[in-house]
Image 1 (cartoon, protein in one colour):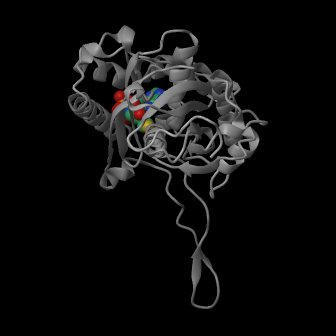
Image 2 (image 1 turned 90 degrees about the vertical axis):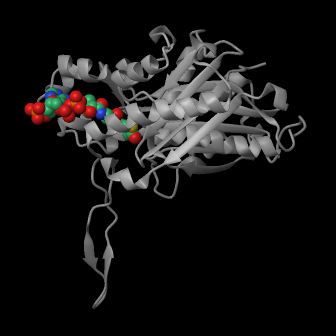
Image 3 (image 1 turned 180 degrees about the vertical axis):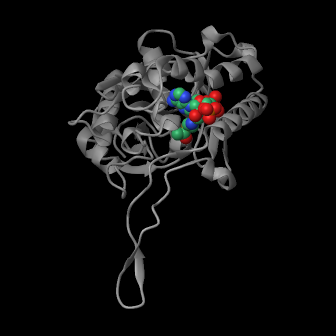
Length: 342
Ligand code: ACO
């Protein structure tokens, strides 16, 4: 492993050291979408809170966005890319179906890091953060970059007004470091999956049988655009997110008024408000930027985190309750304590 500080050893802590983010360079307003499908700014804003989304330009890619976010996090941390042990990329939209993390590792110049993808849609970033933390806790690794990035614009049916208004492209990164247990920044976590409800939201493979040799055929490698039963996903989110946050708070003996921030997956402002109200958390403590970006899937949580760190809202020592939820179905929650760069 690269780096010089001692490993944390079994049951060590995980410090949340630095963050970064990147976004698609083309901004598309609600009114502009109304030129393409039968929708309007008033409908989208009142039902979702979204005003615009950012879509990758012709020279951008998923790997590029992820690397840009990662570079920002490394710069804030003051770390050399060579000191990383792992680049873990949460994405459902890799440039390469075999995985985009190694490409990101190469773009960053993180020559000593192993790199791989983790797919869990909008829960992906939290699942990746929790997964990476296990390597740090055991002392197997010392420095990790967790990146959540998605380019959903590639998979949206831009003629389906029920879903196309929701999504955008972005990336966010978090630099994590092994630390003593008493400085732990991952105070608790919960993770759930329910594949029996997966058809509420998916990107299924197209049924495309092609002849191979006499008597045999093979599946062609194509996918359908995003398919979503919006109301079911909405009901799932407003039921399961409060339940998992309640379990997280109980498990960590934390009361809602001890939280500095609520940082939820940015899917719909109405979902954010409903969850905050269930815990009587003032809306001023609910981090939200989906008006500008829409739902960037695995990127929403680290992108929001990075903006709030950079504008000074999130300060060292702040406690953040976070929850990701989405396709799978999958959902998770984590209680985080921000440390910041030393
Ligand atoms: N513009 C105008 N009208 C619209 C639009 C639109 N963009 N979309 C739907 N409508 C119409 C519908 O056709 C329907 O009209 P009808 O009554 O004449 O049939 C009417 O508006 C109401 O449609 P609903 O689907 O009932 O609208 P709802 O209030 O449920 O809002 C929404 C839809 C915003 C999608 C909501 O259900 C939602 O946010 N669900 C959660 C979706 C989500 O967050 N998905 C991502 C999860 S994260 C991940 O893993 C990627």
